[in-house]
Length: 263
Image (cartoon, rainbow, N blue to C red; front, top):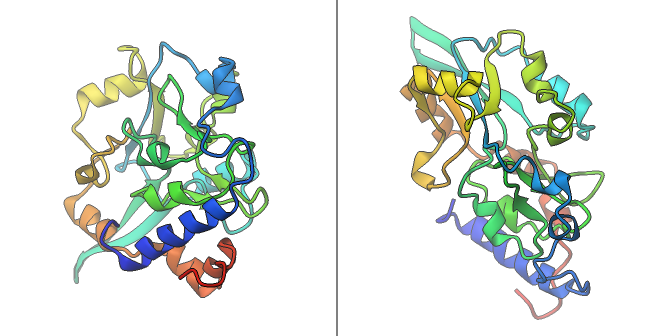
């Protein structure tokens, strides 16, 4: 949303607030103790490149993935790391429901990483984009930079949060919870570097699309059968998170009041 004045103002105010609060030695250091120490949880599997394929032909919009994610990751009430958007496409009498599961796209070129002033948001060697909640100070740059609006301020931790592809489960050899609970088998997850993985086979067999390819972020969540009409409706949908937050009066609470004389 680079041309939206309200979002530019949001970014400006956020930047001022962040600068005003820059009392930590961590600020602008771009150092991350876990990553710098080569902690496997921060590095991931250097030989892998993880991706997800979502086969929309199999999605029934049941939201089992949404519920599983919230339980697995203790996502606060009324906040979500993943969900399934439901759209109505076509014109009467040729109308049908369309479903688009959404989550962080773990982009190969993540704009959220380049704008993070503390190094809290970074990309692991296996392609998973994560947030270190111990380093994040909640400036909000990454929320504004994400073209998919898939980040949020965690109401409990008070810092940025998002999907991690359930990285904590991957290190135990498990699939992301949303994949494991998908009743239609619509979500396929795996290592693109492994030609025998199911995700590699799906990518090699079926044509796929990504959301908002013009943004240049190179998303690593791929959709099969993403109807062009469905994509058009999705692109035209307002930023629901912002709409809801505005209605609830949360936007004003996310940022400290600006110092006098600063507008």
